[in-house]
Amino acid sequence: MLEILGNALTDNGLIVAFTVVGLTMFVSYFLSDKLTKGRIHGSAIAIALGLVLAYIGGMVTGGEKGLSDIGIFAGIGLMGGGMLRDFAIVATAFGANFSEIKKAGVNGVVSLFLGVVLSFIIGVGIALAFGYTDAVSLTTIGAGTATYIVGPVTGTAIGASSEVITLSIAAGLVKSILTMIGTPFVAKYIGLNNPRTAMVYGGLMGTTSGVAGGLAATDPKLVPYGAVTATFYTGLGCLMAPSVLFLMTKAVFG
Image (cartoon, rainbow, N blue to C red; front, side):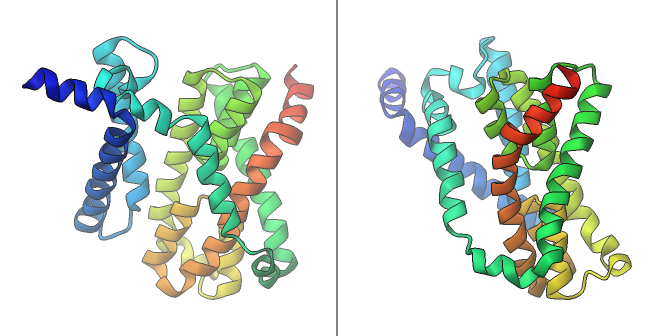
């Protein structure tokens, strides 16, 4: 009976993958609501759980693809692969309206470019401190510090190793969690109490889930405004990191 069930799950890997991800999201948002009162966004908890499951999968099988190295979870490799990931990113970008960014004015646009570049530089500095010296690894980790979406997109584009791409996701996750937790505490000191400053803040920080979670804990009315520029931040990072920023890093570090 167990063999039949195992074969059925293996033959329907993508369905199993959607089920696992759905259950993970349910548990993550439940924990976010009950344990943190929404201060840590469910998506950040889900990513942390995903990294833990990937680690367990690698330890159990000795493989290099995390949980998808286990036969019945092989569909996760397809679901989490570049094709569906990039599709999700493009779908998110299609939901952004360029006319909305105009509401933030010049300050909002400047904050987008400044936020991407500053996060990238900080990420490169952290990568250097941990011993990475090649341009590909530095760029990938720097891009991950922008957001945990920009990191893997950049790493795939420039040929980074899976280990470095994983580190870039972890860097983006840490940034997201810190943004969620820290936003309510710094809000009153930076004047984060109106739509315009929320847009600028979203452009500087960039991590959509972090900004949304942090603003929700500060003032729920500000969430849509911060999320607008944060969404554009992800798209801008995906454009700049594997192109301009990579070439600049390569010129400096070879």
